[in-house]
Image (cartoon, rainbow over all chains, first blue to last red; front, side, top):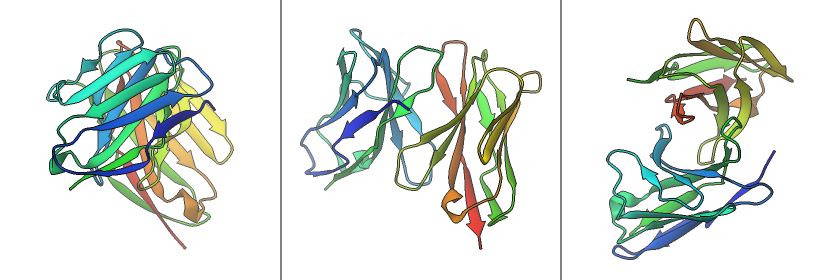
Length: 115
Length: 109
């Protein structure tokens, strides 16, 4: 299957700082990228959907000024958690899709810990 | 509203067969995915069904009935490494993925 690379896999940051997570599709053009958040023992929660070259569409309850998403190219999307707080500690996962009728491929996930 | 139901947890024995069911009510239907997720890892793709019937892929098979809003994932010859969560996800009319809460499968020796 296609490869989606997410980096970093783990990050620890201080409260109040910002953290950037990258998601790259290595062997296909990702017209759509999804960003998910997952709490322990819970299902994936969609945060936002981004199409290349346009603004991300955020799900209800997700602060777009706090979770900045950029999808500047067909192979790269970034999620920046701004002014991080301990409650932002979670597992963040990206997925990428080429055509709308194909499966979404997942990155490895990023475990963020805010101390 | 959109809703996907899966059992929360199932237990099965190594070498046996287990069926994980998924029922859905969504605004439109453009396919159903099954993903496997081990603890602390991202989900990995297992199957995709868009037409009624059974799709077989090695030890794993997935079945879909669109008229009943129902799918199941069948795992044969269970191995300890199959212990994981299994997520059902439906593609709605806007081509968005709607996720079930996942079924935690515990395999016992």
